[in-house]
Length: 312
Length: 113
Ligand SMILES: [Zn+2]
Ligand SMILES: [Zn+2]
Image (cartoon, rainbow over all chains, first blue to last red):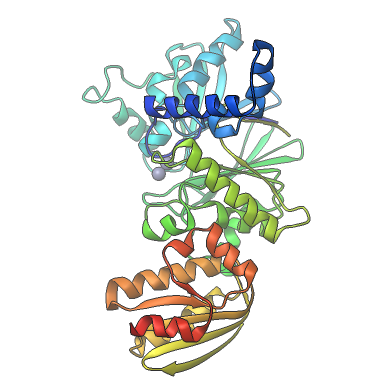
């Protein structure tokens, strides 16, 4: 299975600001001076040494993860990240019809706003199946493209499959289970298994009761997964301040991952107010927490960024 | 988790003994909630004998402090955490929103001022 992140931001698309770009350049130059850079030939190696938040950005597109499993192509959520993914699918297809399954966690804007911009949707030769457990799913997607909000209606290429929220089904030879998460207006997690490898996609969700009994259904759902994609929009403190906003944090994710024997966990759905430096800082603290609680082994953890990929 | 309490000058000093995690967070929360219902507003959580705190414990501490501050103008603070527990309060940013004191006496005195 191949996994690639196309959108990692929560709530709303968040472009990198000019002031942030300037800060990155300034910091890179300072570090270059400190490192005594003198020649062109030193630049590439120096770039690789730069801290992550200086060299790169997590990215501003909203929720979208591409999963390729054998012949199947699945797309987790259709936030703005699905727009560039659509262009890449067209490029890769060499003119042949495209077949994808889009699995929606829920229908908040940040998870569906890319559908009108998913160019493969406009070619009737393509097969696009959208799965989701929210009631009247098709109507919700049509309404997003009502003429009052968007000039083009939802193309009939999008075939909607209504799930219930506690499903067990297959897409090709990929086995898929769903679970209701904890989010205002509901959200659903997906557990995908293919060739003995398992990926769990679980955003957006707020775990308020962190007792063993309350977390058991989710820990069971994560059990022994090779990769769990986890909503960590907030810090521990923000999570309590922003009660009922429907999100989680890295520390709780780590505790659940340890409990469930998860191999890798990726933190995503980054807060729009969080710049790269802050994200990097939070992640570093999460790494410290993990080292304290799972000094020998434990899950590998990652901060999601656009282009992050895994092969399982 | 072993939980004991001693009240002086309307400050409840709660002594925790054990791991403060997903298995014990409920007991601690219930204990403090009961005392809030009894009319207590100020709490010192003594963590000298807490060997381990996970996010479940951190959350209970934050939630109770928030409620006390919002509803009864009360408060909660932490006393005598072991170095590893103090470290978790620091990396989680909780030391920015809750007072952490060297010992329970100093913590209780903090409320009286
Ligand atoms: Zn979201
Ligand atoms: Zn949402």
